[in-house]
Image 1 (cartoon, rainbow, N blue to C red):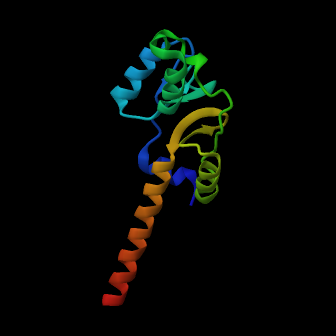
Image 2 (image 1 turned 180 degrees about the horizontal axis):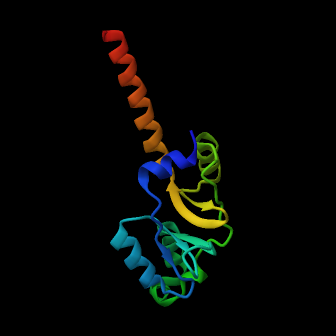
Amino acid sequence: MRIADVVKRKGGAVVTVRPDATVAELLALLSEHRIGAVVVSDDGTSVHGIVSERDVVRHLHTDGAALVDAPVSSIMTAEVHTCTPEDSLEDMAGMMTDRRIRHVPVLVDGSLGAIVSIGDIVKFRIDTLQAERDQLRDYIQQ
């Protein structure tokens, strides 16, 4: 199984935020879309960073309420681990677990094409196992 299989099922929509947007604007996006992370991009196709709820919480602890007026670039993770649609689902699950990463942008020909979360991967694997179980049960009952 490949990342492309997950993207096909969940869709390729990606919410992005500009690096100069405020953390307050970021929080509005996270809430509006009910997501845990946003790709930081000037143009919606390049990846300059990624920012998550965890980043906000960590910086809120140190920076206090003034954080909401700070630019997203001041709290984003600039070293972003990415993948391609051809990458193995098992390899990505292992990498995300080992590095404690919950969201990974998917690059198609070097441009942002989708984003997958560890939850997307787990859900895909569970759905696949349940389908296999159902096929085996149906086969045995025949």
